[in-house]
Length: 142
Image (cartoon, rainbow, N blue to C red; front, side):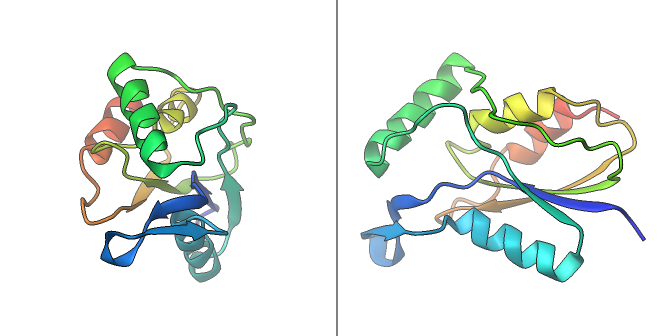
């Protein structure tokens, strides 16, 4: 059996909900999905936390995320797990501007992914997984 970890980045608070109405979440959608996957597949759970504060206003957050992407900003990560004992990584994130949040780029660039299996999952408001799989493949060689 594989040594599994589910790693995710999630935003709670204001977001666009059903019917395109603003709603507030006590727990982000990606966190809910990550907990479901971890419960179903076993293994450990780790939340990626950005070492910066994002706006609580969802529309401002969208602009912040776009600016980070356009500038290629590498958002600092608060802490990193030791991945040496894992061979399967479920990797979850919201779709921000057709890819992953920039904090995921920072996180992924931190490791040598040789021999690891990454299974991405993405929460979104209907836009799908976008180009994130392509971006993961570029960063996570091996």
